[in-house]
Amino acid sequence: MAKYDTYYTDYGGGSKAARPSLVMILVDLALTLLSVVVFVMLLTALIVSRIDPEYTWALPMLGLIAPWLYLLTIILALYWVVRWRLKRAALMAFACLIGLFSVSLFWRPDAHRKELQRKYDKNFSYSKRAFKLLSYNVRFFYDDAGESSADSVAAFLERVNPDVVCLQEYYPDLAAHSERLMRLVEEYNTVQFDPGEGNWHRQAILSRYKVLRSGVIMRPTKSIWADLLIREDTVRVVNSHLQSTGITAFDSEYLTGHAYLLDTAREEKLRSIVSRFHDNCVVRADEADTIRGHLDSLAPRMQILCGDFNDTPLSYTYRRLARGLNDAFSEAGEGYSHTFRGFFDVLRIDYVLSSDHFEALSYEVPKVPHSDHLPVLVRLVRREE
Picture 1 (cartoon, rainbow, N blue to C red):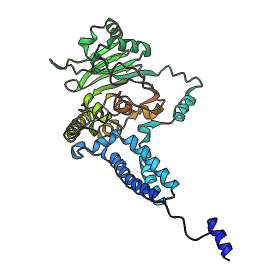
Picture 2 (cartoon, rainbow, N blue to C red):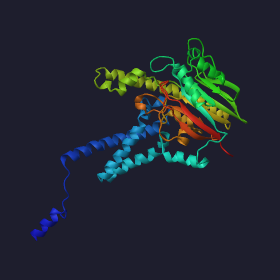
Picture 3 (tube, rainbow, N blue to C red):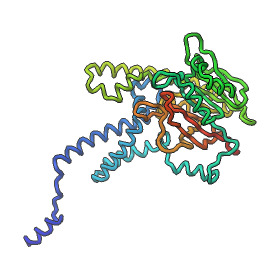
Picture 4 (cartoon, rainbow, N blue to C red):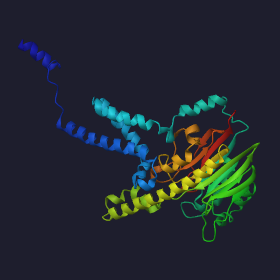
């Protein structure tokens, strides 16, 4: 019998399971703690977007890293499945399931775009009733080197030839030095308002369609609107630039370059960054509430809201403004989209939202270097009733 006992023991027939090594025990312990932290952070990021930032202090910052949190959750779930730790795998799978409803705000599969192509025709030739709308924060027409980008922006607009252009941080004084841009602007019906002396924070709406009326929602011209006669329809187009995050280029370089790891004064600097971020989140929330009130007063009229919201899709600002509207990226985008050239190129903070009267046929973010933002170009068409 001893002989047979030895046989079964050698080939896994013994009743005692092999004990894990000390290294694996420590790895599992570390990843268990990481799983709990990631689980809590992801759920917090999903919940905090529903709460006014005034009551959530620094928690809205989780929206900046939400895509990474979700990706890390998937990786951890797969790890625990492979390790056959089903309870921990179930916990992370639960977080993945909850976060799945927000994935379309950050990433869309290519198959979704192919579905749109099949809906129209094999060549994806857009309906003649479709029109192109561009939203672009041009950073006062200054490029990365601090030189005028007005000519470059004009060349870009000539190439994409949009029917409606919503520009944020439009600086007419610098634009006037570009003959090319001025010639192009003259081809459009232009809506802009003087923000007052000493303030160059101005938005502009350029339209190939007739402008029926226009106005200001928030002064000094942080949010403006124009009623456009697009064929037989009157469409309210709102162009907004919401409060900045308060995080400067130096802050971004400080964080992305991991300079805080070697900085002895990092605690004070990090506290300053978080404090400014929170304060500006509160301002943006108030601005979003104001714009939301304007949009609600228009229902059920045709609406298009676009601009630089300075906030991610997992934010109070976005949830307030996107309520009742369709995000062009979620409808027609593909892959992962970012619109800000900085912070690891992961932030989508510029949007085109429209009421149910319209369908987004295409969504593009051309990679041009004329500003710290990237333009958002969409094709919209009136839905068939």
